[in-house]
Every structure is written in structure tokens, then in C-alpha cells.
Figure 1 (cartoon, rainbow over the protein chains, first blue to last red):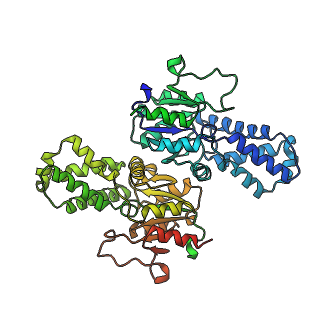
Figure 2 (figure 1 turned 60 degrees about the vertical axis):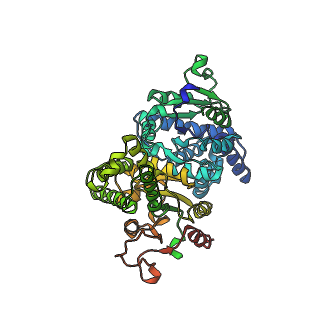
Figure 3 (figure 1 turned 90 degrees about the horizontal axis):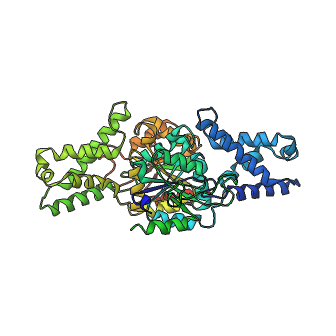
Amino acid sequence: MADLSNVQALLFDVFGTVVDWHGSVTGELSALGAKHGIDGDWNEFAKTWRRGYLQNTRKIAEGGTGSLNVDVMHREILEDILGTPEWSKFGAALTPEVRGELNLAWHRLNGWPDTVTGLYALKKQIIISTLSNGNIRLLVDMAKYADLPWDTVFSSELFGSFKPDPKVYLGAVKHLSLEPHNCAMVAAHIYDLRAAASVGMRTIYVRRPGEQPPDIEEVKSKSEGGDVDVVVNSFTELAALLAERK
Amino acid sequence: MADLSNVQALLFDVFGTVVDWHGSVTGELSALGAKHGIDGDWNEFAKTWRRGYLQNTRKIAEGGTGSLNVDVMHREILEDILGTPEWSKFGAALTPEVRGELNLAWHRLNGWPDTVTGLYALKKQIIISTLSNGNIRLLVDMAKYADLPWDTVFSSELFGSFKPDPKVYLGAVKHLSLEPHNCAMVAAHIYDLRAAASVGMRTIYVRRPGEQPPDIEEVKSKSEGGDVDVVVNSFTELAALLAERK
């Protein structure tokens, strides 16, 4: 725990780390399909949608071009998926208005079981903020929907790029009037934590079902020979760990 | 009320509108003076400090140079005041550490009596955010101290200027994915509301003791022949007004 002793703020990745995007989006797709009498592999649809987002944000983080607003990006990917032969029947059933509404499924994601309790406990001890590639409005809507008590909302949108571009992490640290080692990144994805560590931030890995690709080896803390500062199974476990600092 | 019918977000000025800076800062100065056996016109000290801030931010909003971080700016003004003959005895008693701690008095401001209840009631209906010239860390600390449940924290710091520069208002509107007429500025100062109106935002004036200079005529709503959309006496009154929209 020595590595977290001077941490004054936690910056949270959101999709997958704070909210269960997969369960929530698959649920909305499945309900919409049922309404229109259409069946399909909704699990795969949700994964393709998410994969498109990861590919686009990664491309922009590496200097490529594209929309910095994730709502716009999600809509473009949705249109692409609905234009494929596999999903053409579903696409034909959806008016532009319904597609717009479906696109906002990403604003209506539910937290993991420990999320809300854990964030409220953490907020009493330390500054908690998002640091997400999602746009601010999306993150604000999600927080209202899922009862996420952020002290503030940082989005890569504010810094003109996407994670894992270092300037996103450094932008948030600067606006908190802190040094990188006073901030910890909390994420369920090792690429995000490695980028945070590269600018001097502390790193907290949270195990979340389905978020770590199966072909990547298990993430471990430095004390276990790995490369992150702390590994936890939930935000409530993290809150208990931080409480021990006092 | 017709003018607020499409408003989806409220952007709040903070100093004077949400928190009673004058009472809080005067109280801290007075307590520190008593500790060092020094008496003085603490009311005047607080007003001079605030005036320096208003002059500096105004200068930068009009294109001048200076620190965009209000913590830094407050400290520079504090040093200037303590360097005057009038306050030299007080200055001699304060180490750099104590001055740094005193400077953070601006992070420990109390809300007006209706502030917390009103903001919680508003948050259930609509997006509520700061739009302040204070820096983000200051606003986050203040929110934790005074229990202000912001959905997010916007600071002029994010937009490279200070209110009343139009780009500060337009920056917040853009990051909420809204049009200006879907946002209302809430402030106890007419200059702030006039700048918000100039970019197309709606305007809500809140009467706060001592915030409107005595030489300016009473602020009135458009229906009373004035130039703001709504005038209220408290955030709880505003919450009740918005609830009538349904």
C-alpha cells in the first residue's frame, strides 16, 4: 500500500471498469429486437459496436483523424453495423429516430454490483473523477442514470485526443492541481494503466468479468511480480484499502 | 416561465451566487488575526482580496495576460495586500506556510442557507454544473466542503479565459452537447448574465445579500421590463419554478 500513500485523487476509466456496458447494451438490443420480432446474436452485436469504438479511439489517440465526440462515433459505427447483410433486417426496422434512441443506450449503463456503494465510500476519503474516452454529456447522463457520485467529470474530449494518449492523463492531473504521483488511475484494462504509469501516475487494476482479453496474461501487482501498484476485485475493497492509510 | 421550457442544464456562477465568500473569508481572517493578537478591518481585507480577483479576471477576459489559475492569482493578491503599510503587522506574523493555508480559505466557503437543499432538488430535475472563474481543484474542494452535488464542474480554466469572455460560456454549452438556448446561466451578478444572454443562453438572476453593487439599478425579469428571464430569491424557489414545467 506504500505506493498509494500520497494519492489524493482517483481517476476512473468508465466503460467496463465502472459500468457493465456489455450487459446493459445487450439487454437494450435484445429488447428492441423482440419489439420488432427480430432475433439475432445481440451479444455479438454489442461486442462489434464496442470493438468499433476501441478501434476508432485508438486510431485517434495515435494521431489519426475522426470525431472526438463518442456519441457521434457510436452512431457512425451503429450505422455501419446496420448496413451489413447480417443485420439488414434489423436495420430496415429502425427509423432514424429509433436509431438515435438506441445510440443513447451508452448513456444508460448500469454499474457493477459494488460500483455505487464503493464510489460513495471512496468519495468520503478522496477526490473521485472519471477519466474516460466518453464525451462529457454521455458521462453526466450515465452518472445521473446509475447514481455515480463523481466530484467532477473529466473526458478525453477536453484534451483533444483519446486515452492512451499521455496528454489526456496529464490534462486531468494538471486541472486537479496535482503531480502525477498524487493521482491513481483505476481501470479494468492494462493498456490504460500502462499509459497512466508512463506519465508517473499510480495504478489500480480492478478485475471485471469479460474486460481483460483472454489472450493477455493475468494482471499482477508489483509485489507479485507484475506491473501495477494495486489489484482489487471491487471498489468496496479499494475503499477499505484506502481507509487503512490513515 | 416560457423562457425556461427547453432548458436542460443550469450553469452556476459560484462565488457569491452559490457560496457566501464574504462571510466565510472574513471569518477565517478574523480568527487568524485573533490567534496572532492582531485586530483590523477584516471585512475590508476580504473585499480588497475579492476586488483584486475581479480586476485580474476581467483584465484577462478582455485579452490581457495573467495566471489562469485562481489559486495562484489569490496568492499574488494576498501577498500584495500583506505588503501594504496598513497590513504589514499582520503580514509579519504570517509565515509562507500560514499564508498558503490562508489562501485556501477560498476552498472552504459555506453555501447560502438555501444552497444545499436547493441544489439537491434541482439535480433531480436537470443537469447542474458550475461555470466559474475559480479553478477546478478549488471548485472540487469547495463542493466537498460545502456538500454541493454538481453533476460536473466547468471552470473557465478549461477554456483558456475568464467570464465574461463568450468562449467560456460557449465551451461549457458545447461540452454538454446542447445549444445555448437549452442552457441557463444562474448568477447573482448582472454582468455574468448579460454575457450569457449575448451567446443565446437563458438567464436566471438570484438575489444575494451584498453581491449586487448598490450603484446598479435593481435587476428585473423581462416580464417586469428588465433584461433577465427569471429572478428568484433562492435555489429552492428556482427548483419549485422548474418543477412547474412538467
